[in-house]
Image: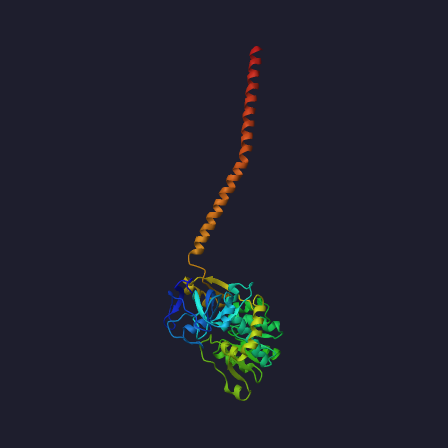
Length: 397
């Protein structure tokens, strides 16, 4: 710790649903079972917005550093064998009740929640390793336990839904994707998705029933809620299950109780932290191994923009308006204004190179130009001599 600075830059939330402040705060010290991670990158997720509103499954006293996951290097161990084992390792890390958030240059994390990554995994890839990829694998595990032959995903153009759809289809499980805008429909069909339905279209319910009768999905992973939940559940076969994992509509779910009582359908919640605890350490090792193997392919995350800490407000605004375009990544090594200066330096360097090139060409051409001048002078001199001779001959004549 002596080689570290005393303070770090961090994004701090002082009141629920309030603004974020970029401040210099003391670097936290890891306790037994914890490690200190020098953060390199952390994404912005919808879950972060829920946390900042006080509506997430995990709450912490204010002021607080938000951020659910990220990637960095373990630099200090607070005590414990596993902490010593992973010291110096590049890790994906998740925030817990006992840890600080990931939107800071350093964070204290539970050592057991730090997942070592391979050397060829970049910090950018590692920053997205634990949230959406593990959720997608969790969805598949839940669907298999429910013996589902097909599934439905709402918010079909979101990062986690697109990732989940790719994974399900890699396992031969058909997916019905539900979106809310025409451009999202086009994006998914461009991805090769076969079943894409727009919930805002007039014939949505008829189209939904037709596709459901075709592939017979019995599990619906819903992050929208509101009236959509009941509409989809009513169209599904008996004994189907809805797993809620988000509330994008901000309206309460509306479900016909008769579907629950007479058709034995059900509504459950999916919370990633709870699912991880239920799986246990041994089974989670298999899940993490699958994540590592697929992080660059099926479970890859699309990044739309990389921002520095000073750009957090702009980044959040952009993300909320363009969620379908990809994720926003906070880079802690990126500084505001540095890119502009680097660009200026690059332009200056290119100009100097061009000038040097032109000077070199001029130097190469100079001897040739000198020869041409000398030849021209010689020709003029010869011509003058010849004219002088002719004049003398004329005078004699």
